[in-house]
Amino acid sequence: MKLYAYCITRTATQPSSVATGLFDRRTYAITAGDLSALVSDVDEETVGLNKESVLTHQKVVGSLLDQTTPLPFRFGTVIGEAELKSYLESRRQALLEKLALVDGCVEMSIKIIWPKSALETRAKTDLADSLAGTQAGTEFLRKKAAELAGNEQVVQQADDIAAWLELRLGSTVRDIRMSVNPSQRLVLAGDWLVPRVALEAYQSAVDAARSERPDLHFLSSGPWAPYSFANIDLEFKSQFRVS
Amino acid sequence: MKLSPENPLSVEPEIDTSHAEEFVEELRRVTDSLPSRINIDAESVEQGLAKLVLTLIEFIRRLLEKQAVRRMEGGDLSPEQIEELGLALMKLEAKLQELKTQFGLADEELNLDLGPIGRLI
Figure 1: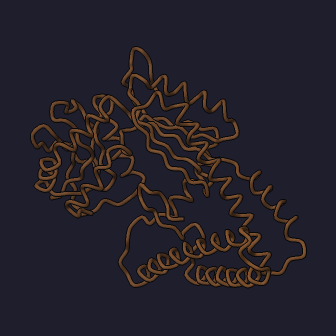
Figure 2: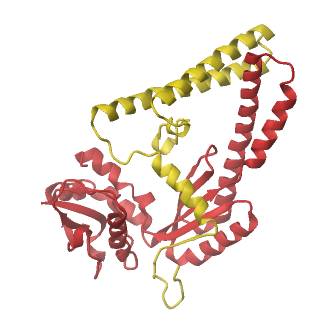
């Protein structure tokens, strides 16, 4: 029998009530000293990625969130009991440090889509002026030069958005994970580790940022368990090579 | 978000946007370009290998383009050399496009996620 792992908590802060796990199985704790992992039994070596399973994983982890801040496993972590205990024991110190980092916090997420049509139009106009009377190879290279100049502007603008958002929200958060993709319409995806006591201040700062930049399209979500700040699945896989 | 002085720890997640359709479309596009599972069969291995090799070629091609543009803008090249270099890069781009079509790969699929460093291209 294998175990599906949802998250790790301190044994002392084990929750009083938890939602039912995948395949309607009961969830329970596997304890190793002062750390516990919340699990349920599974028959298979892997769990299929589908909407229902993902929502159940989130429901179980989320049901702990109003009682404590767990370190969530990424969806799909299946492991044997002995390996899980060994992991909790061998990584005890690092896991306790991560629990201390996320203690009292939740993860909030912001995604931003930007309109790039203005930049694209400007690059095309500049290019048309410079291409009159050139040969095919030269024309190609000049076109590339214009594209690169446009790209550099786009990269700078994307970096400016990230810096601006960090400035607006930074004072309300404990930690930040942000990825900026200037070549994509979804230009920014940021995860913010927010102390629960600062959630209202964070939300006010997000609302103010939205008002300040109506040209940017925002999607904000949360509160979530700190998936982006736990990062325990990678360590887990590298140590035990689980699926 | 259900936050109030009486219930400060209530943490039901919510999603807030005025542009739901736009985000659904973008997130679906990003998700579709990610491999959900690695299937070890002959066809997917060939496709995966082609994707990896073409990604690296695309990366090198872009570096060459940047270098050529720098040299052109720096005044290092004669008009003839610019024309010759431009034609060579144009043919390289066309050839790569042909290979992408052959393996059924879209432009946005030619990339590598390097984790915390970001994406290759």
